[in-house]
Image (cartoon, rainbow, N blue to C red):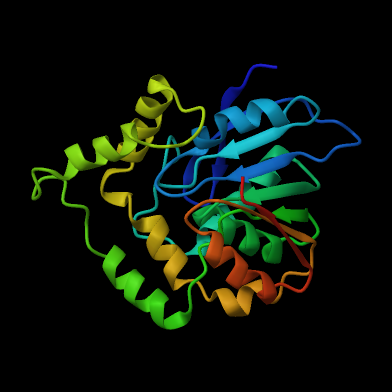
Length: 241
């Protein structure tokens, strides 16, 4: 089934999402939350595979992709409230959720805001660091990206994008993802600020739903391992290949 874009109203205005597959009675929809500063398009290939037997929804976090932006850097809770609005607008009773990097904490907060809707959490790439490190990172991400001040900034970002080792990313895919990164402009760091202001120890410990933590060979593998004991009901599986 073809993927299509769709808008709903949420906490900060219009939210764009990508929807593929049909709603099946015996399989809950899967909602996927992306890392910063990408968009729901980050999941394009995964969404195509997973939507064979269920509905898969990949929203653009407010301020990223095609979604309206807040006036100021939002908190994780505010972003999760927007996602709750999305589920209400779509009239979906229960979902399974997947979060990656920034999307992990949006997922966990959503699970706390509406536990009656969120049944299971899948969390690869948990951006967990201790409180002291969070404070330092938060200060770092308050600095605007030097689009005009550093003449090499965009060139370096482009070089990093086209040299990506992501398996299956052909040239067209790399260009598409680079465009999504640049699309957020001055808001690029807002998602990171929200992550590093989030009281992860307190919030993750309250999650009662089953949590699955796949750990592939990626940048936040050690962070995911450190975060796993914070959950009440988590299962971690290593995928070194």
